[in-house]
Image (cartoon, rainbow, N blue to C red; front, side):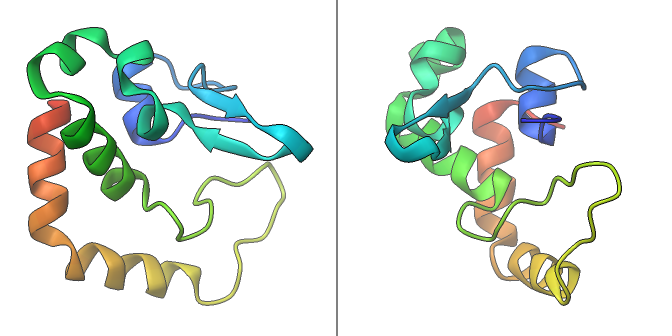
Length: 106
């Protein structure tokens, strides 16, 4: 809601939020449109790689189900989050590298 993740910055060429791919569901819950509807937000990538590859790749790149890594100004990061994030990046190193190729992220 406040800023874009690195994948969002890459796709939308901006750093300030809200992210154009932030989708709202019932009950005020949000979800990442780059994961759930990549064709809507990245049609060229979609035509080259397809929904499955883009959705899976986006999920790895944003660390889906890890908890949000983007904080509002003044908000404290949950204890242990960075350690958990670095461990995630280590475990899924190969999948993340593949996801970067699919999304053409450097």
